[in-house]
Image 1 (cartoon, rainbow, N blue to C red):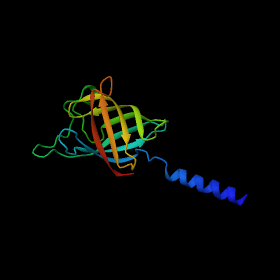
Image 2: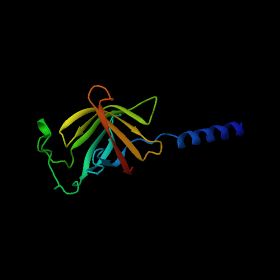
Image 3: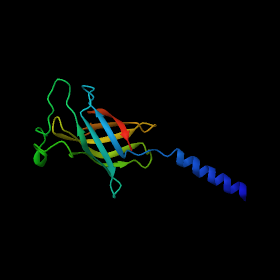
Image 4: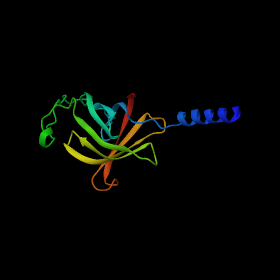
Length: 150
């Protein structure tokens, strides 16, 4: 009996240590074209199980002035401040692959366009590859975000 209890306890502890980290936390975005970081995003998990992210810090690209408002955004986001702007929403963790997040949308503040999106967390939980696309994911681009904290 004691052997079975110890075995189950060890099994429970080992499976929890291998559980995939989720994407909640602070992330530094890195532009795939320039390699520069333009913003930090705070991702939270909502009560409905989806993930959203808002800009919590912005920085200029070298040799360009800092733009604080989204002049290329459309509709209600036009000329709104980047700080606090939601740029990542509706992501759901894949039940079969917990390192993948699907059915999301992402705003590219530089163009003002909103794209369908998916994201994949690396096994260590330190890098998040966010892919924005139109229609199929082959027609899109990816950006890598670096985890700053949980």
